[in-house]
Every structure is written in C-alpha cells, then in structure tokens.
Length: 318
Image 1 (cartoon, helix red, strand yellow):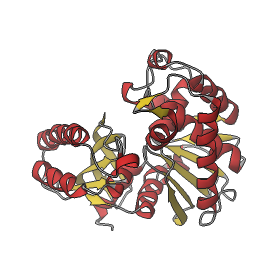
Image 2 (cartoon, helix red, strand yellow):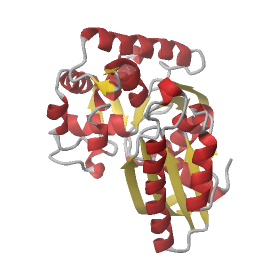
Image 3 (tube, helix red, strand yellow):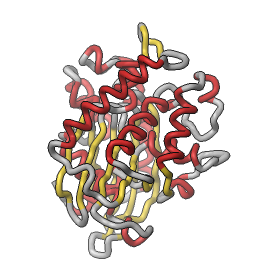
C-alpha cells in the first residue's frame, strides 16, 4: 500500500483525501476525506484576480489539511491540484506561493483536459463492479467555475472543459452589484440557459455527448440535487453515492430551487451553507445537460476528481 494525500482546490471548495492505495489490486482505502467551502473563485469571472479574502480562506483550509496529513503519518506523496479559478487568475503566483509555504508542495494548475481525465478515473474506476451500468460513460463534473465532459469506457475517448460552473453562472447572471438575487427572474434564468446551450454546442464539437449509455454526475451541485431528490433528512454520502436520479426529479428540484428564497434554501438540511447561493444555478446546469443529451437519469458518484488525483499520486501518473 502507498499512503497518499490528494487535494482538489476548485472555484468553490477545497477538498482533501488521505488514502492507502494499492495499484496492483485497484484498492483505494479511504482514511480521511473532508471539504471546506472557501469560494476561491470569488469575483474572478469579473476581475480576473483572486481576492485577498478568498486567498486567506483557502490558506486557512490548507493549514488544517497540513495538520491532518501530519496526524495520519506515513504519507509518501502529496498531490495538490488547482482547477478553474486559479487557471483564470492573473495573480495565481500569490496562490502558489501560499500553498508551498503551508503544504510544502507546489499546486499544479491543471488544464481542463487534465481535470476531465482525473474526474473520469475517479468516477469510473469502481463503477462497473458496484452498480449495473453500461459503458460507454459520459462523466459530467459540474464545478464552481467550469464543467467537464468526458466520454469513455475503460479509458478516456474524448474530453472538454467549458466555463459553466455554478459559481460562475451565479456571479455572471444572478448577482446585481455583488449581491445574489433573492429569487431569480425569468430573464436571469434564460441567460444561464443560453450560456449552457452555447457551452454544450462547444463541448459537442469535441465530445460525442449523445453516444454514451450512462450519464455519471459528479461534484457538489449534482450530489446536493440528489440528496434533495432522495428526501434525506441530512446529508448522507453513502445514500447519495451511486443513486439514480431521474430527469423528472432533477426538473422538480431545479424548479423548486429557482423559485425559493435564500432563507428557504438555507432551511433545506442537505444543502451545505456554502452552496445555498449557488445551488440553483448548479441544478439548472445539470437539468439543461440532461435535457440536451436526452438522459432519463443520472448516476450520482461521490468519487470524482479527488479520487483520480489520489490514484495518479499513487501510481506516479501524469
């Protein structure tokens, strides 16, 4: 077994996975998995820079994660991957310097294609043996700043990253003077739908979106929609993992989120407080994807880019 630590730093959240990996058997034994909402991508779509307060929130989480890695002991490899927000920021050198000072490793600001590959590996490595699904798979990872589309079976056949994450769509279309609209207007919803449609056109030039037999959905927007659809009294990752959520359920949840107030969304126990203002946009992105590709259901996975990063750390993959 090789003990590894993987950090996925996205636009909305930063997550840690400490695991023992055995490349020979394919086993990935989870020791510690945690997530903090830091909103690193705050304002990046508008300013092109990482905000000082967003950096400090992220560095605070990094300090917590450094303590966790030290507490577990025996970690042979640490891999820190940064995605959409840090790709887009002019001052990403400040971010890199802070992470190196705290964790001792330089964050890899990966491309959208690399992000897509990691997500695919993390989501599908155990899928065939755990739930009855048919390849090829279309893996859709709805993040804060971007969404990745990956088609493959045992390997990635095609991938594309497009800028329609839940934070980006919220800040671009649902915020006025920096404040998120209490209940989105029809025009605001239509603006998101237009962005998603254009992004799907772009993704479809590279990825055969309608050829896959199974849609696999990843990340917080998808798992939160699933938890709401399942009627869970509190968030339960075991119940969410590999659940099947129908198109009609996604449509119903999305409609409710788009017509509810901030307080009403905050009162839903399965929604993390850091997602309350962006979950409606994330749900709408998922709905529009399912409608475009004709998916009757989405298989939800709690294993995603973070697990893919861990596997690459264990095997020394690029």
